[in-house]
Length: 311
Image 1: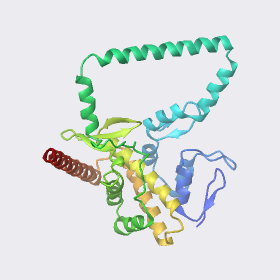
Image 2: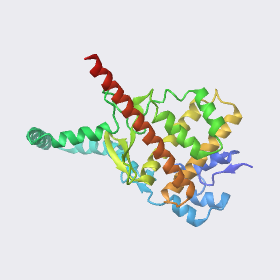
Image 3: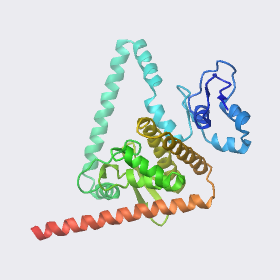
Image 4: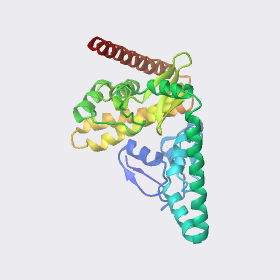
């Protein structure tokens, strides 16, 4: 069967590729008919209205370029770096007179001076705030002065073709096992400590600490796991493209299928489902993080003991 987009005329034999085309955040050009992707999806796959509502729930839109986003944080980050925003600002600056521009520059420099004064004053207010910041950072960073990378900017050197093949062969049939083992390889890998950007900051209330945009932010179960799952989908979609020549056709199909299942998992997380598998997944991920954190503490204690003996 050939799947054809009624909006732009794109066609493919692969159902997964066609779904990806319809689910892409940037709309394709309405060359044939001005019809929404959700309506095309309903025609081909007879999607229930409730499922479509769940998928479109809280989907944000950039006020500047109209790009659509599933998650509010992603939309806010994009709006800060939107290319069209820079163009608009440049156009405004070009229209401003030189005198007005000098006034704006002077105001900005005064603001910077004020911020510097406040920073110096805060230095002498005591060390309580500094100690708290150090303790928070120690939950996620090691004592070796390693620069911890943000979620979404990890070092992916460990994901070589043979590792991906083994991951597909062992966990390709179960998206949850695949996702958890992917976290183990990328975020909880002792050899790549710069990727250790997740931690349990509150074991009683199950709050996840995730390094995002340079800061350690706290998220509840569903929200934190949603961010991780979204990140690992992006990672494996890029690896599927990178290793096209190294993987067999069967391996590509299995890899593509498990990524699709992870996307379905993402929808369940977004809809705050009470599915038992989701609750079990939360427990397993948190257990993995706890074990990893405890092992790191043991290694640090052993290292401090050796240093004392040497002295």
